[in-house]
Image 1 (tube, one colour):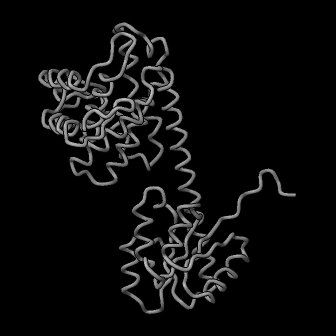
Image 2: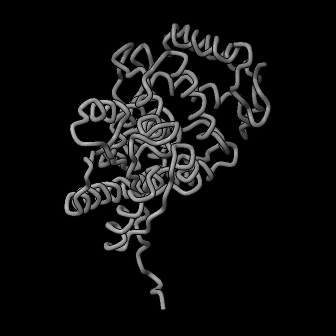
Image 3: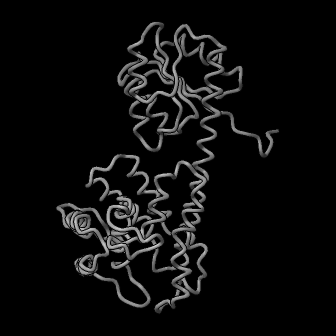
Length: 335
C-alpha cells in the first residue's frame, strides 16, 4: 500500500531523437527511482513541459526543430518554466555548443558518451537546487495569500492587488524597464500593503478620517511589510517598493521622507498606479470616480509636489493610448 505521505518521485524529461540514447538514459535514471518521460523533438518536448512541467530536463542539442538550444531558450524566457533545471547534452569537443548552451540559459552540461556516475551527480545536484527554489516560491505564495487576505478584509478593495500588478507592469514596460524589475513590480502589486496585517481592523476599515495616533500606526505598514519579506533574497528588488511606495516627490511622504530621485523608480511607479486605482474604486465614503476625474485629481496633487510630473505624464499617456488595456472591473478605460 502506498503511504499517505510518500514523496512523489522526481520526473525527468529526456529529449533525444535517437531511441538508443533514450533507452540508455532511462536505464541510468530509473535505477534511482526517477520517473522518466521521453520526447523525440523540440515540439514534443515543449508540449510535454506545457502539459506537466518536469523536475529536470536532459536535452540533446541535435534534435528536430526547434533544436535543443531553441527549446532551452524558450523555456528559460518563460516565467512559468524558467526555474526548471536543464542539462544540455553535447558531443565531445563541441565548445561552440557549450557557449550556445550558456547563452540559451542552460544550467549544466553533459558530454557524450555519458558516464553513469557523472550523470547521477549532476542530476542529484540540480534536483536539490530545484527543491530549494520550489520552497522559496512556496514561501512567496504564502506571503501573497496573506496579502490577499488583508485585501479581503475590505470589500471595496476587491481586485486591487491584481489590478495594481497589471498597471505597474504596463507602465514599467512603457518606460523600458528590464524584466527583473517588471517581475518585482508584479510581485509588489500584491505585496505592497502586506504590512497592514499589523494594523487593527478598526483603523483599517474606518470610514472617516484617521486621528493623528491612528495615522502613526497606519504609517508603519510599509516598514512592517518590508520586514516580513526581508528574509527572502528573491524579493530583494521588491523590498524598496514596499517600503517607499508612500514617499512623495517633495519629501513629505513616509516612512523615510525621501524626495525626488532618491525614491526608487519602481516605488514611484507603484505609488502613481496605487493612487489611480484607489480613486476609480468605489469607497464607503464616496462614489467611484471616472478615469478622467481621477487623473485630474492626481494632476492637482502633482502640482502640490506629491508625484513626479514626468512619470505621471507617462502614465496618463498610457491610459489614454489607443488600445490601452488598463481596466476598472471588467470595462476597459480606453480603446
